[in-house]
Each structure stands twice: as C-alpha cells, then as structure tokens.
Length: 183
Length: 85
Image (cartoon, rainbow over all chains, first blue to last red; front, side, top):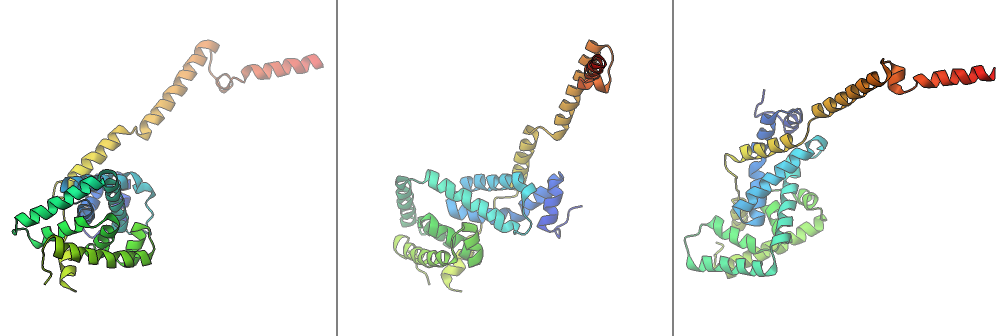
C-alpha cells in the first residue's frame, strides 16, 4: 500500500519489483524539482517537458543500479541539468543566441506588463550556460555549494566564482538590457 | 536575503498534473518493447524439447547418453579394451 510517508528508497524498491504506481509516485514527488531545473536552463516549457520526461526515463532504466547513499533529488537534478546542457550545446548556436537576446529585449521594450518572474526568467536566459547552471542550482533550487559542485562535477571554488560572476551579470542584464529596477 | 535573491527563489515551475501519467506511459512502452525473462526461458525449453525429439527419432530411444552423444563412446572404449586383451 502506497503512502505519502514512504521514503524515496522504499518507493524505488517497490518500483523495481514492478509497482508502476510507486514509480508514478516518485515522478509526482520530484517533477517540480526537475521542471524548475530544466525550465530555468532551457527557457522553453515544451523543451523542458521533453527533458523532464527523458530524465525520468533515464532514471527508470538505471533504477536497478541506483546507489542508495545518494539523494534521489540530487541524482534527478544532475540528469536534468546534464540533459539541458547537452540540449543547449547542440541547439544554441551563436546566431540563435543573439536572436533570442534581441527578441527578449524587444519584448521588454514593447511591454511593461511582464511580471517579475518573466523579467527574471529573461535575464537568466541571457546568462551563459556555465553561470546560469550555478545560479539555478544555488539560488533557485537552494542546493548548497557542495551539492552544486557535486551535481556539476566542478570544484567548490569554481562554483563560488561562477555564482558571484553570474549574479553580477544577472543584475547588469536586469538593469541595462531589461530596464528593470532592483529596489 | 536581498530583493534579487527573493525574485530568484520564485522562479519555480511545474509540468502539470498529467506529466506523471505521460512518463508512466513512456516507461510502459519501454517495458513492452523489451522481451521479458519469461520468453527467454520458454525459448530455451522449446529448444531442448526439439533436440530431445530429434534424438528420439534418430536413435529410437531417449536416454542421458543418447542426449549427450556418449552412448557410442562407452562401446567403442570397451571394444578397444577387449582387442588389446
């Protein structure tokens, strides 16, 4: 019998033994985390959903060998971030990036009705991948510096320097490109 | 916590209520595509059964020796031994 109190590991054991409802429960429990990671990274909900689906399918295939000393949330975030980075590397040519940037600026220039979330989202998309991934993990998803370093497989010092630089760039994009006042 | 930190904390998203069902459908499709252990076992049993049947037709009877092809080996060995004697 499934309950909301069951741990991720208990649900994984049930799912390995063929309980589809347990696997669905894992997806429901972690989909928000995966959605936040992928949407903030790729900036498009359709692509983010595709990445989200791939994330859980990859986990499903590797579930038997999942090491239970790792946190499932961290494991899923790592897959989602890696798939997002792969997508960005594959698709985002310099020309496309410039086009997206100018489109974002024009949207803001034409409209003052965008809410804070949309404006911050635009500014995030203007960051390069390496700074964006650190800002997303540390500031949006609330992972510690150690966890962020572990997910991105980079040294802690690199996380700290990318975070500092990423936040500076983000403020600059908000103020200068999107004319947004940080009060 | 400064204002930018607060704004960033609000950048949360969700895929919607039907997302988990779509993932489950995708994983079910994967399961359906991969042959289960049951089919491998059935295939192995059918192969052994066919082997046994063909041995029975060729030899007229079925035993461990005929199945392993060692029934002639014992006789040959015995004849060789008698010849030497």
